[in-house]
Image 1 (cartoon, helix red, strand yellow):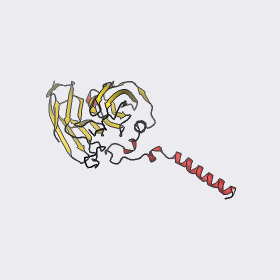
Image 2: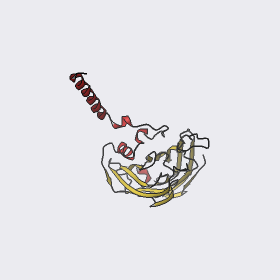
Image 3: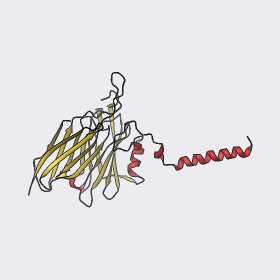
Image 4: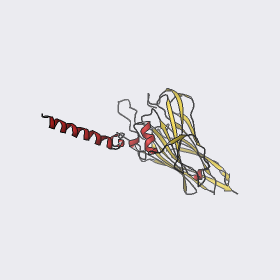
Length: 106
Length: 165
């Protein structure tokens, strides 16, 4: 699963770091039918989590109410240099990972 | 059938009826065919059910939460959404979770965000699917356990579920 994560590379201690991520995923609702009339099974990224410097900071439990190619923007407070790591999994157990390094000064 | 038996039958029927109401309403909620793991399937029937399963009897008050949605959307496939909660996001006082509940989607609970004091700011942006003109509610639970909400009405010209987007 392709994804793009955008995080500021540097931050001052105590500042807010904005994390933006887009994941390419159809977020199948399970309410769609193909041309043969078969129902397309629901398959959404139902679990997303973000860790910063090893600790979990944000988690999302998503359903079909989140649009295709899910986009998330949230903040973390700069405390120490480390990786901002995002992991997610869909209902077919396909998982993804994206990370960005943040250097914290001061 | 004599009178006594008829009364006995009615008594049993009444007892069964009372027992029915004594059961939690959740026992009758239809589970979804293919619910998202991690999202309680029993909460999916109605927006009220979804809210009640989160509140568990607690009260919710309007305020502290601000849900930003456009007042109108051409279609419901991807509607920009920002939810903010007025919170210092400190170890002592932070937002624990934010739930987004749709009034008309087949699955009312659209997403749950779990936040923590390390975020620094209680703000999450995403894009939601909306099945038609409706009211959307954002419900936040703070670290002290209290619930706050904001509701926004949005006009959706073309629902997300019509052509399967």
